Length: 232
View 1: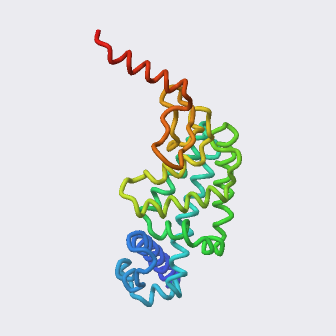
View 2 (view 1 turned 45 degrees about the vertical axis):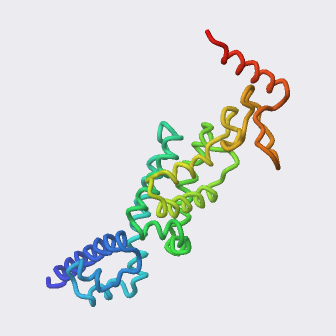
């Protein structure tokens, strides 16, 4: 009869350690000392080491649990009525979540080997791929993009968000690269157009930038300016 209470206490201690580690890793990253985690959990350092022989083992346990939740959320979205919203919304949500959790950001953005070692990489990729394929099927994502490229873009967005003040700005710009190009936006934003007919202009290597695509448009522009200058 004395064994059960001890096992219950051990389970509670383990749960307290995991919660304390989650909070510590989320705020301070994986460099936080195990002694600090023990203090947060209200247990001795020996109790932490009995459950997790190394800090890396504790880090993997915490991150694995969080990523399992993310994978489950992605699987839940697989049948969403709006595949585009499900896909883009999931990516934005993952980045936002990682910004508040340094350990999760480290795992998803920079330490993919750790995910692979604990069996999460393949599951996460499969769940994300399902969302990607459904979004591509409705024309919301470029057809030439694969899930590995999305993973790379996702990791890059996480790292860029850390260095940018405008929350979500870098992620939005990164995700724009996944959207299909249409006739309305197929011209690069920094490309110069004719001021009269909007034809894309070839950048001049020397001299002033061109304003018109031809002499005809230049004459039209001159006539417009002349007409606008007349009184009445």
